[in-house]
Length: 206
Image (cartoon, rainbow, N blue to C red; front, side):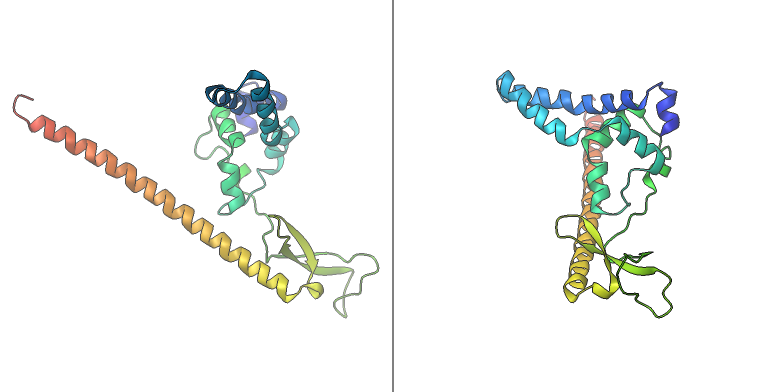
């Protein structure tokens, strides 16, 4: 991504501005088509842009540590379907493998475990503990996660993890089927057009 940006002589600030300009123009056109007056239209535009705009710091972070979403997750689907990512691709025009590094993120998912230092004053979990403890990644119920020491994890936490994984798997499967259905539909349309063309060629006088 850095190489693509530098090849076009964009600074991080330049690229962020270009990314933000794409949804801005789309929003303005859509709002004006709805017949909204200028004052209310720009207010709505600014509110929406405030939620979806990216900063130069965000662009720089993408280059250094990647997009921060793991492939095959709802978070990845949301990010790769976002205005920001679509605008990024329009501005940089990457090839199929140009942003593999930025896409290759492994993020902690509910049910994963990690070892972290034990908080001061917390009891050790093992007799041979060396100041570290095992933590489990638990859904927070609001779309995020938090770390919880294994000794504190409850049955409700394990149930929440199970539910999250089931929902995640169902979402990924639904998206897979949707992409397959879209592919089949496009192939069918192309086939129908080709058949129609061949029939026209076979007509007398064609």
